[in-house]
Image (tube, rainbow, N blue to C red; front, side, top):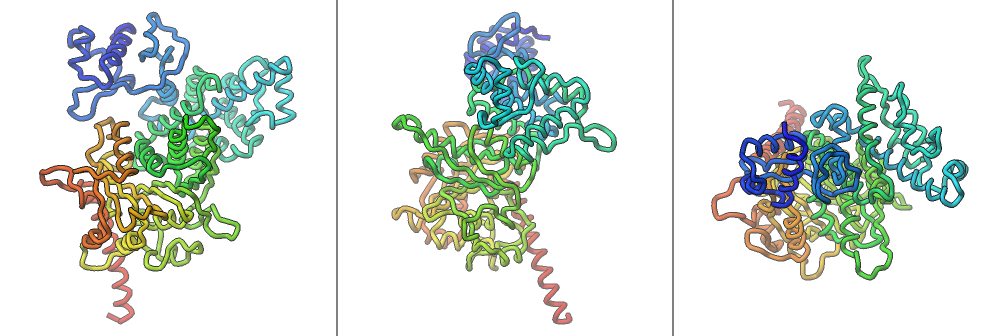
Length: 603
């Protein structure tokens, strides 16, 4: 078993060599024999602090970043800024701490199953610590925390969120009310969460929807001893205003959501979009201060957050003036995911209006005339190939979302139905970015018969609404290995871009990761810059005019026009399988319709 010094030496060497690092280079830097090197490496991999490169890659890389100061308690402290292998350490990242806390229930394998317990508790810890900061500020003016408690109890407007948690000793942290629960812990936590929600309408349905005392067939879903472990793990780090900035805890919260996505399989697509995809979308859309941004199926709110970050980065340091934040709007169908999105907004210190409901059938955001409200920018990653919407759903629409010539794209996939909703949600100069299944760019093109999805795609091309199409690398998304595309709409294309579409095939711009591939920072900048500037580059991008698109039967997939290698290329199996499913579904619908006709004819 490696000792603590060996673990720390390994991590220091990994940072000095550079992460990711080749095993041979790292072993030579340490001067260790192979057996010791492999033993220490295995221990750190098992702890989740170091990761191996995927497949046959001979590399290692650090799993965490973002150092946050925390008191160390080990015999040999690592040098400032270095990673450490020992529990909560001086410079251990907030991301790694927050994941360790999540794993305290049943380990990393089962942590995603408990996300609906973990996320509200960490969120509440942030609320408690910020409330403490506000109490201390008031106490400095009035003389004591006891008086500060009395003042905020009388006037809740003195703080952003009033928490009705009062420790017996007013000098103790507010979180101690939860931490000191010793009996009926699940019942006690639920009671306190509901009390907080009652005092704060903005939090109702968000932190009080989970029953920490719930049972299934007489057995507790989360036993008190494991809940106690989680509370204690969360208690080891302070999350107040002076301890961690909103953007850092926001990134760590999204990191936790990503870790849950890794273990959630197919359901991950309901609440998570890979951050690099969101970064590209938000950079290309170029949101400006004060703009209104909308996500009709917002999941955990990650794409909205990315737009705010992109806006702030674009104007940072421009003139020193105050920056008007974006006005963020979203709708989400799944109640647990809706709660997640609201917590994400608040923990990033953003003002967002996230509503719950079925956007497709009952869009929430309307104007004073009862029509669909329009926005400056729209972003979305709807669930691909939804087949629950019928032609009647489109025909009965009251919001003019599905125009003549477009409309119903076929029951087997609502991808272009979502695109039509997003187009209808744009103002006269609005722009949108939406992640779609790869097949949405090409299904039906080249077929002898008519295809409803192709007809809708043709309508968007002929109305000159498509500005860019980005073909993504494979194996980025947690619910599929298919690559996906990003479709960019612009209702006010510049004159020089009219009659054309810019295509980017970024299928080779990625690095291997575990468990998923990822687009590195340099790749994000390259792709976004190429899309913004319409920069043609061999084997990456090209401008295609509408005449060529028409010649190819309105196939807008970049892989059709841009070949990334000289050798013969093959389409991903996952893409072919998905398209076969759609074709089979269409065939079944056609058979049903034909059967009805034949029955009416008495055949």
